[in-house]
Image 1 (cartoon, helix red, strand yellow):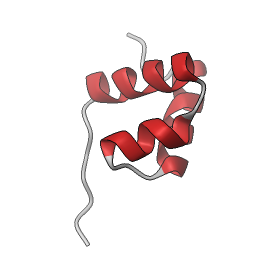
Image 2 (cartoon, one colour; image 1 turned 60 degrees about the vertical axis):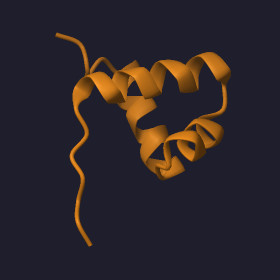
Image 3 (cartoon, rainbow, N blue to C red; image 1 turned 45 degrees about the horizontal axis):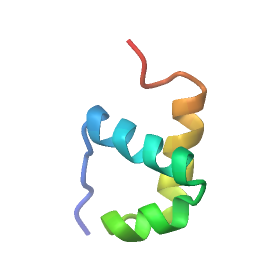
Image 4 (cartoon, rainbow, N blue to C red; image 1 turned 135 degrees about the horizontal axis):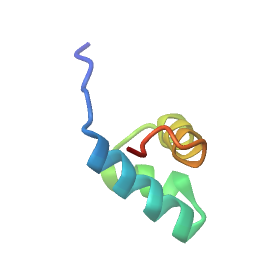
Length: 52
């Protein structure tokens, strides 16, 4: 299995959509991502990991 590394800008875009729509599972399905990963990204985004 190949591990894919996503760029920070993509993660921020996905996080913003998940927060605005309030449903990370639907966003994950749209981008064909794992819902757990999207939830982790949102938590990291809220903690300020993707700033600066």
